[in-house]
Image (tube, rainbow, N blue to C red; front, side, top):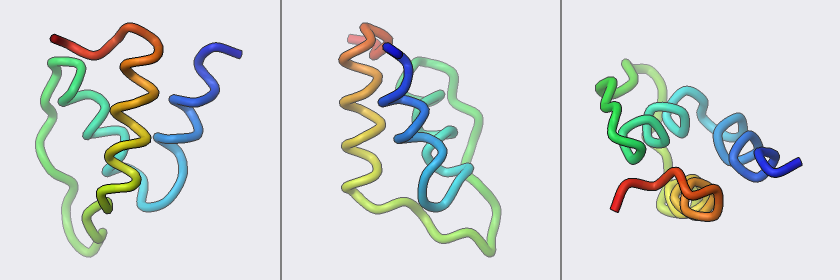
Length: 60
């Protein structure tokens, strides 16, 4: 149950951008997604960041 906000933030919208963003924020950059995928918007980015922060996974 604790991971559900992160799972929902990552697997909605234009996956795999949220997953790559989460990994980068956690200190494991994997590079950008390739076209034709559109970049994620700021709302998605904020949701991923908040979920990581709430789980204590966001690097300081």
